[in-house]
Length: 159
Image (cartoon, rainbow, N blue to C red):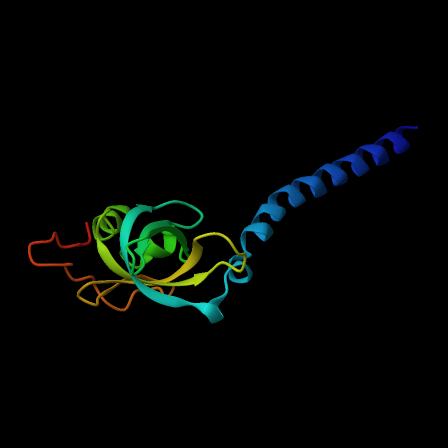
């Protein structure tokens, strides 16, 4: 009888361990659908105005506005492929990012739109400032240091 209860306890421990591993692995597998969620073959580039930048895990998000020829404004959201750790390794701290992508900043955005229809959502491929310096891209490290957007604008520097 003691052998049977030890065997039952081992089965229960194995079952609990398997459930714990599944609980940890499933969110990670679900999260990494970024490249299937967005259509890189349909990426586009347009002038935009930054609404806000959220330096957050698992991926920072940029919210921006686009205007059409008639002055109608579309509010878009895009996630960055690099996570905050990759941004930090490239020298893009939270402070630096918030300064370079402050609300009202005029930028040129390249995004891959979502594969689903009906939303203004995309994967951020690249952001350049009005001087043409690349601020953020899906290529880390970033190839250029950001230049000021205009004379007298604050310079984004590493803290």
